[in-house]
Amino acid sequence: MTRIDWRQWADESVVQVDQETKSAQERAADVTRFRSDLEQVRGRATSRYLDVTAVADVNGRLVDLQLAADAVRRDPRDLARIILDTADDARRNAADQALAMARETFGADSGLVARLATDLQPDAR
Image (tube, rainbow, N blue to C red; front, side, top):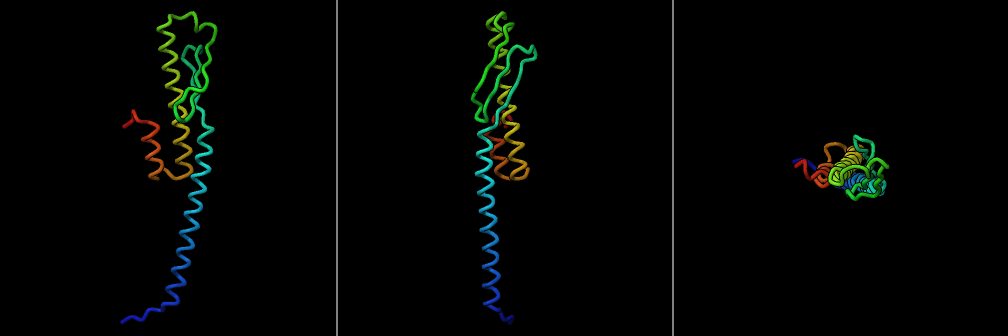
């Protein structure tokens, strides 16, 4: 029968718990920084005709829309389609930026990255 040195086992266990606690604290700090950085993400897109520019945040909300003077000369239905397409491109750009940041922060194989990808790109499911 092997004799266990309980004092050594306890010391090693304390060291292991301390390391796990430190790792969890570092991860929590990473998540806090990431969340703050996410709020700053802006996706930008310009139409192929260069007359519509859209800016969206990471939530997909349109935060800016610029129309060149030529844009208002278009058929209203065409202009509406161009605006919607450009806004979608801006949203995708913001999502791509957020995913790249997440991969860099947490690693490409992280469950957090997979969840964020699902949340940001629901049409990719």
